[in-house]
Image (cartoon, rainbow, N blue to C red):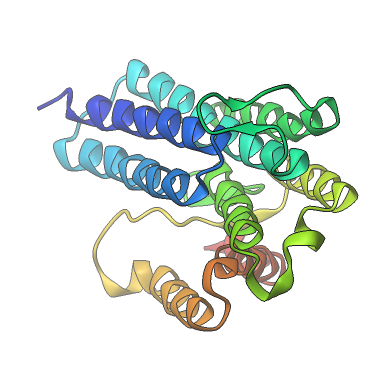
Length: 238
């Protein structure tokens, strides 16, 4: 049983690799399903480790390595596909050449790795995050990807604009390594008091999904960032 948390972490990595493959073949719905799997396993490994009272340096390293792929490389690949557009896609072999102008998308992957490295060394991030977490960054990018792919609200051309996406890469990269305190979303216990923010946030997300569909994924992260900035003193004092 002591190896179960590490097995869940590896399941996170497996889902991340599958999401990456489906992203390059421009099947974002399937990529979204596997990304959701990464989120589930990323939550479960910590919960199971705490429930079993097991912890190891290997587990900590594996968790970061898996997250670099699932929540670092995958959103970078999604932004790459948005920047490169639907051209040069072969049904059999995927993208037929590399679009150089789309490569800056992976700057987000590099900053995600930097953020995860800082997180491992930062002893302050026990009850809250310092800077945007890599899963939150991934949710935001996934929302844009699905919205553009489905052309929801006629936003495909706006989201696919090169300079808009460069701005997204720069903004998310800056937020990942910022010193802004942000709400911690980990479930450490099952009592109402410690999960009230998570439950309210979940309710808000359900409401946003009703009105915005896939774009709600991006919208909820914007709400998360704004609320974190507004209540930063309360977050630190909690």
